[in-house]
Image 1: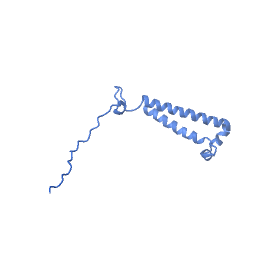
Image 2 (image 1 turned 135 degrees about the vertical axis):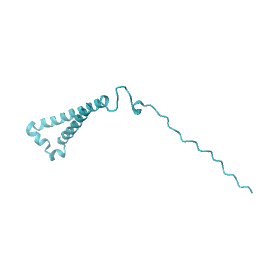
Image 3 (image 1 turned 90 degrees about the vertical axis):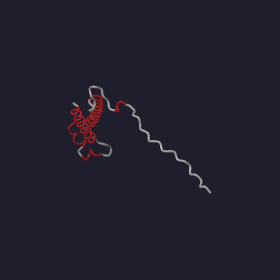
Image 4 (image 1 turned 120 degrees about the horizontal axis):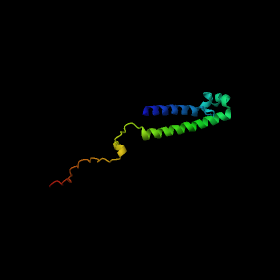
Length: 113
């Protein structure tokens, strides 16, 4: 199930990148290079195409966020049914070993005259 959800989220991410690049910006951007709204404009109309791409961006982004949360909460690998947690998840602090104490140094003695 974990692999299926990860594959689905990667596909959604790739489609989201494509949809964002197809949107026309004020300067033309990559939308003009790859056809952008110009190709879709003949099918939907220019105004409806921009609405479609904008709404699909929001839906794909929201779906990707929900998938990320679901994967992290329920399908994260490494968790067991027994409730064992890693040291990081458990928050247990480990004792840090200290360095051995250095021998005390004596002040140099003045030479005898």
